[in-house]
Length: 511
Image (tube, rainbow, N blue to C red; front, side):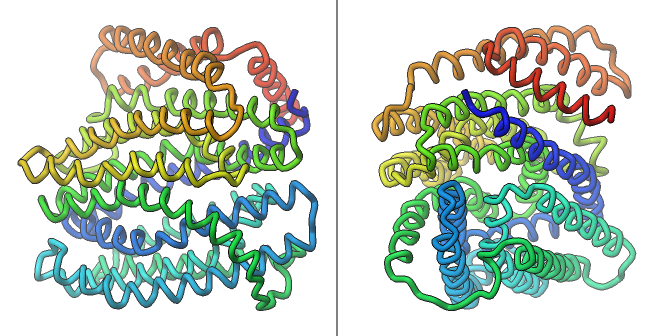
């Protein structure tokens, strides 16, 4: 069995992150509404698609971030302090190089693409260029922050991680208030203030790590060719996965801009704001779980790491199901409450995005296990190959005149395909009990999903239309799904973990 201390640590870290997430979600949803109404639909769409270009240019950084996280966590699991220091210094050096590469590409290819290929109204082209520049420098700061963020997560200092996240959220709330009352070009001002926040957060992370972790003190440039090859090779294969994710998300966003303009980008931006709020529940849980999976594997506890992958895959999906069900049914009502103006396509985009992340949530722990082994070549080749098909297929559908929502339908289809490709690959990589996973995880998930969907939709028929309908539906669906999860979804071991952590939480609250 997985050590009780590990379960307690995961539960504690998850609670820390959920506290951050709840406040973050409330403030983020409010600020999104304020920003949308302050900027207007077109400017909001411009910000989303222009920011997407910068994210695409940062593909190398995203690959290295996964590599840094894995190598730091693995050495902490092995308790090798000297090697940990080498890895941290090397990762800082690599990310400085990445920042310079991103800056070079951004100021050449990126500027050309923005001004010659994007569908931006002529009257807003200057503002779009300002947005682009501030987004570039914000992203460069993010690149330089990666080793420090990775160190905090690898050491499982989730309290600090949560606190800094809250500071960032409240600074964004201040931004939302400023742009409402300021008369300057709101789009340019919004971009500049976000850049300022990224700089402040970078300084906070750096100061904290320098004071708390031995490996991050006194950075020295020390080029280790063997370590660079090892981290670079790992990152190189991760690059395929990052490229797939970019094509899967930002690439399609740019296609929508080319075919339909910034109004559809605004609708997609709203859908992904909802996705970010809902998915943060699972993301925070997985941030707390993934270091433990890596450390268990590093210590040779493979069976325990498998068991944790099983449980965390189920918990990730069920957490999302609890939140998504009422949103899927009452999407139009929720968006109407949230926004004064609901962009066209926002409702269908939101529903499809929620279905997409439900499918994807099952794979988070599987990917963490593969990263822990270091055997990622075939995994990234096949999984990324499947996900990358999303971009050309979406282009063909749009070219033949299909509506923009078909791009997200295609995303859902390939998410489903990628899940099974992942299972096939990890079965070939090592002796992962795939049959048990299909029965114990996918089987229980499917039964809970089908039964709960039928029960909640049937119940919804008898809830009268009123301002309280969504709240009543949310409470009803939460009770129904929770009962079904406990009865059908969890095995005896998982129920015992749930009971133990519940008692620990109650005991702490009553002290």
